Image 1 (cartoon, helix red, strand yellow):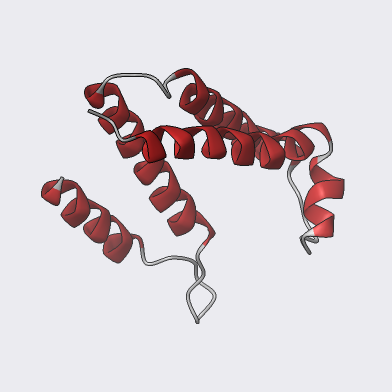
Image 2 (cartoon, rainbow, N blue to C red):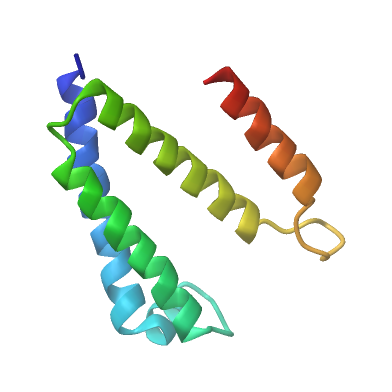
Amino acid sequence: MVPVWLRRWFVVHFVADWIFALPLFVAPRAFLGLLGWTEVDPVSARLVAAAHFGIGTESLLNRNGTVESFRSMLNLKIIWSATATLASARRWNGEGIDAHRGFSALRRWRLKA
């Protein structure tokens, strides 16, 4: 049985994804400029928006799904969030993320699930 509060959070996730994705898709330079970005690749930004549209819409459509479908969507959301965080992280030396450490942590989490 999936708790009611989790089903409600799926709806909240849908709304949050769409609020973020819509301006990112329609006007990526203007939207990211408001957030302090100075260089924007509009194609990449729209691809990220498309992922948010898809994941958010599936959250809404799946809110009344089975336990198995919820588990699958939660795994997708966690993997997406973890890899998006890794992709946007910066090391102190400016060389980007330490991929080995990041993916090792993701692998450890997955083994616990």
